Image (tube, rainbow, N blue to C red; front, side, top):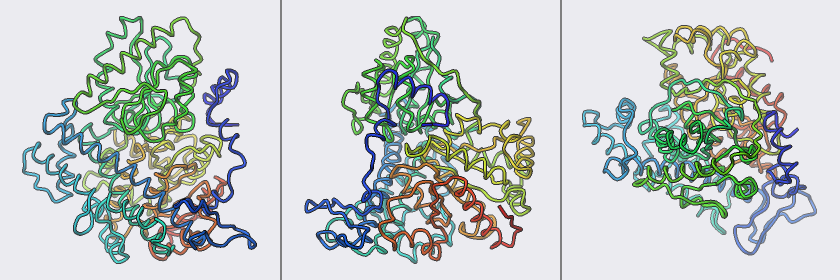
Amino acid sequence: MKSKDPAVNRLIKVAADQGIETVWDRYEQQKPQCGFGELGVCCRNCVQGPCRVSPFADGPRRGICGADAHTIVARNLVRAIAAGTAAHSGHAKHLAHALHAALHGKAPAYGVRDEEKLKALAAKMGINTDLPVSELAEELVRLALGQFGEREGPMPWATAVMTESRVEKLAGLGVLPSGIENTISEMLHRTHLGVDADHVNLLLGGISCAVADMAGSHIATDLADIMFGTPKPVVTEANFGVMKEGSVNIALHGHNPVISEVLVQVAGEMEQDAREVGAEGINLVGVCCTGNEVLMRHAIPPLTHSISQELPMLTGALDAMVVDYQCVYPALASVAECSGTPLVTTMDMAKISGAVHIDVDLEQAREKAREIISLALEAFKKRQGRPTTIPDIKSKVVAGFSVEAVLGALAAVDSADPLKPLVDNIASGNIQGVVLVAGCNNVKVPQDENFLTVAKELAARDVLLLATGCGAGAYARHGLLTPEAVGQYAGSGLKAVLTAIGEAAGLGGPLPLILHLGSCVDNSRAVDLAVAVANRLGVDVDKLPVAATAPEFKTEKAIAIGTYAITLGLPVHLGLVPPVLGSAEVTSLLTSGIKDILGGYFIVEPDPHKGARLVFEALQERRRGLGLPSREW
């Protein structure tokens, strides 16, 4: 079985019948995968190599330059963290430039939509909130752009989102970054031939880079909320059944809301154009984290996620796949050629050979969006009379749980102290802890299997679950982002809490079993919630019964996120083994030694049942540390 999603399995068969190669086929072609690479002991950082250090006693113990396994593994790991940080911070920087251009009249499609969020964030960053909105936004953008280059002292966007004690701890270790791009540059320098060869020092540099990643993710989330609106709960549906044969179906894929937001605007204005070509209307659907962005703010249904991104074209009903950047497979171009679906790239930094490129620049964003949608209208006309294969499978989705939305729901129970209901129920044991489920799908795992297993195991034991990214997408497609799932999967304590809060908030029933917080950068929302609870209790995050899990992770971004989570003090479960086992010392540091320094650490367990148990036991350890009653598995 390739996927736990029956719609995905059906379309995999369509691909096989038509001789179209998918990610699963390419995975099989790559077997057996390089054992040196899986252990993290291969190095190609200079042209004397590539070198590979043997895990066996009779093999080479050092690379040509003399780097041992510990150095090579650490260098490879922190380079991955730096790449992940570059991806998230590039996302943030694009948003900052878009808002800056809008404030100066150079991006008419954009502006400030959430003034309340703008003022709250400005106050948090120490900016005078008495300024007019345009000046306030200008000051905030100036501060945001100032986080990228080197500056004196630590980054405000990092220190302002952590507890004071965590800031002091990281300052004592010398790992508070002074700027995002400065830190990335330093890590690339330090991992160059002949620079840093101390694996402990390299890992400390990786921690600093991960803190910069957290700050970049925060900037991205914060500015997106200000520009496009802070998410509130929305109801829609997910999976391939949301496609409509009689409509112009356009998939929005990638991670950048700057592109997708303008397409949403313009699609609403071009409904009549769609009817003129014989369509019932324009049906936007989401893929991956761009799908999460438009789901949270516009209730646009998510279609599919991560490794199954090639399959929408095989329905024969997709009229355009519009991509921006990150997690977009180059293979989409060959599938598009076979299916006749236009693949449209929209950013000059992310082109794909064989795709149609329409650069959605800020100044002409609306005009470019019309051009893209017009291309989809033409594709719709051409596919008339051709057979389609749309799996009639879909699930209800309740999403849109920003920090503000979560606190708003809790305030319905206690307006004077919104966090009190959550804290009290954790203390009583109705909620055993809180776990963030994040990360991607990985072709090495049957799609969604680990996500579903971990969530069901933990929910049954009264663990409150939050989700982001393609993990949240998995739960959307399988019906776990619903109030109805509470009765099916939640333990009695969790069920009582979700029901009480949902009814108090006027929902007429419980909150969803799992709270959808948004895209990958929106892991920053989970950070804000954890820090708020820690400040409410007067402790650091490393004392809370809070953890994270990435059951099917694959990207460098996920490695950066996991590293900043352990830096904050969280136990972080990984459902696949990262490429570090070639160094026993690096492995030991990441899974145990770092716990004594930061409180957070990695738990590596591919079996999702065992992984869920280890996460639950980590929560129980935290509960005992706070003097709270604990449970056995």
